[in-house]
Image (cartoon, rainbow, N blue to C red; front, side, top):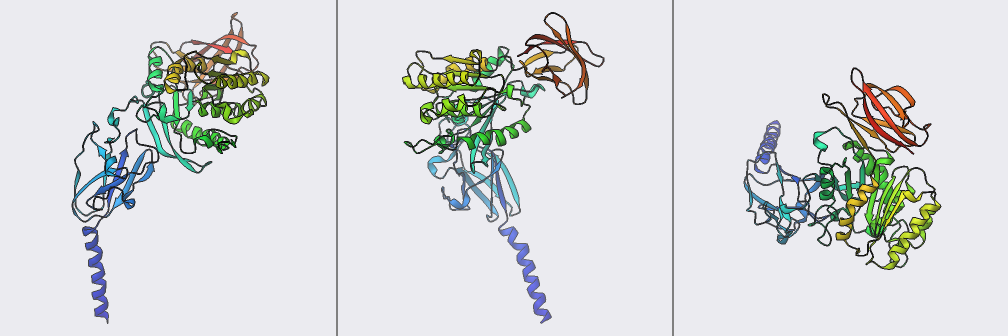
Length: 473
């Protein structure tokens, strides 16, 4: 009996040693996919291990975050050939130019192995590597979880050209329908807003810079972009949850990953059509988060009288800017409903200077129109959001004053945490209003200052005074 037991244990040992060699574990880890990959597309590994079945549900890669995917296979040792598809041979991957890509080949030794690679293009999507998105646009996550809605969505992020070479902190603009913002090959109608090109051009002309966070739309677009249910279309009603996602999930994540100015005076939201409707709702509902809103060709009709009523019933909480845009070639109701909402802002206590209304005669309900008008809207919305002050030329640090204009406090970036600086606030007449010492990150109280223009002087220990202008509302 003992002899038989020893033989059995030996056989188990032999099988355990042989099997990994014959059928080991091969992990394919995809580090990036083309920007024009359709939202929600499944990516299949196809090859000698599955009979080259282009739509095999057993070989769909799993998203692992940060726009990456992986799958673990168990092929026999030897030559492994494979490719990636989106479920059919018509959607096979291509080379860097979008053309035919030969089979990927791996001499697999049967041992646990991880191969890291990139999918460059899809043959059926002619954009491929010719994406029109600029290099400072990236997909943060193809499947960012929206806990409020129990869905996943692709998130794009644009950073200013000097993001990697400075320590600046930036205002942030949240935008909807992200497929249409940066890349014409993902745009629904082949025309993009050119947000990245426009901001890069403005930056080259001296603009401070702004981070843009784009959220893809999905099959539930009408539901998510309206907090009010439309009985005729039988859509809408999830807008409040969508805004909660932006405020309570996405924004904290962005603020944790990027150098942002997280306060309301440096945070905006913008969209067109239904995106304009939800942007106005988000601004009015969460004035503690957003002080700026770009409302392009808004589909206020979808909510009936509710958009104007909502704005009128939410009193002004602080300084704000709202840019209203409609086209003369759009239905007259677009402008009429837009003006009703703009008038409701007055009822809520906003001044005429806090809203801008523009209706060019040639404007249409189209991306080309919104792309053309985006730069002017952005500049008006973020005018004065940040004032930069450079230290003397023999110092490399840079100081930013924010928010500016201010209501109750200002802070300074460019100062290390714990580093103490002397701060003086002088009125336009030269009178000293404040002379204090603060540490990096600490706010300086301005709530007791009368409205007007001021000069702020800041000096690091052993350094020289630098000055900047501040507006107190």
